[in-house]
Length: 432
View 1 (cartoon, helix red, strand yellow):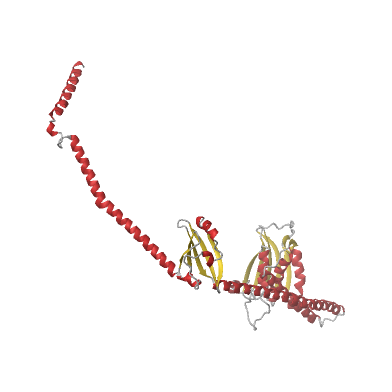
View 2 (cartoon, rainbow, N blue to C red):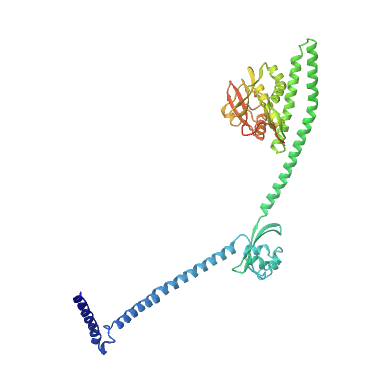
C-alpha cells in the first residue's frame, strides 16, 4: 500500500512538469499563428459568421423580399378584383366614411339617382333611413341593419353594414320589386280564398239546415204512416214508406258528411272529450241502420265478447261518426249475406270489428282508401252511389281520438274494418 502511494505521487509530479514544458515551448512568434488554440478558435468562429452573413445576404433576404412582393401583388390583385366586382355588380353598392360622406358608388348605384352626383355627398341625402349620428355606432359595433325602401317605382332591400377596421360603412342593395308584388298577390289570393271558404261553409250550413228540416218531417210522417198501416194490417205500402225513410236518411247523412269534411279540412272541429259508453253507442247505431239492412234482406247483428264496462274517454260525435260511416258502407256494399259488429279485447286493446260479406276491395285501392272523394268504381256507370267522403272522415275522426284502423278485404268475399283503442290510453271514466 505504501509503495502504491509513492507511485501515484510520482506520476502526478511528472504530469505537471509536462504541462509547464508545453507552455514553455510556445514562442513569441507563434502567438498569432493557427497553432495557437485561441487564434484557431477565433478563426473558425469568423468563418462561421462569414458564411452565415453571406447566406442571409444573398439567399434569405432576397427570398423574403420576393415573398413580400408576391403577397403585395396578390393583395393588389384581390383589391382590383373586388373593385371590378363592385363596379360591375348588377346590385347597387355604396360606401361612406364615418362622417357620412359617400366615397364609393358603383354604376348600378349611380343609376338609382341619375339626376345627382353621389360621390362626396351626404349619404343621408340619398337614404333617409341612414342617419349620420348613427354611423359611428354602426361602424364601431359592426352592426348589420336591413331596410326596404321605395325608390321611384321600384322596391329595394338594403343591408347597412359597418366595417370597423376600415372605418367605413357599406350599403348593399337589391331590387325586390318582383318579390314584393308576388307577396302582395299571394296575400290578396289568400284573403280571397279565406272569403271563399267562409262562403262555402256558410252555404253548406244554410243549405243543410234548409234540407234537414223537411227531411225530419218526411221521416217523422213515414214512421207515423208505417205504424198506422201496421195497425190496419195493410202492409202493401210499408216497403214504399221504408224506402222513403231510408233515402231520407241517406240524404241527411250526405249533408253530415259535407259539414264534417269541411270542419276537418279547415281545422275548425273542436274535440269535446266525455265519457262514452261504446256498447250503448253502437247499439243506438244498430237500431238506426237496421231498417237499411232489412230493406236489403241482410242479417245485421252485434256480438259483445266482453262483459266489462266499455266506457271510454272520447269525443262522442266523432266516435259515433266513425262507426256510423263504417256501418253505412258495409250495408251499402253488401248485396247478400250479413253485416256483423263485434266488440272484444285483444292484447290489452279494446277492438271493434265491422265485418261484411260484400264485394270487397282490391289491394291497389286499399292503398288510397282514405283519400277524400275517391271510390274504387268511379264515373256515372258505377254500381254504388256515394260521395267518397265517408272513409276519409272515419280516418280523420279516428286520428283525432287516437284510435287505430286496420283493414282486411278480399274481392267478392268481404271486408273487415277494425277500430283499435290502444291500451296506452286509460279507457276509464274521463276525469275532467
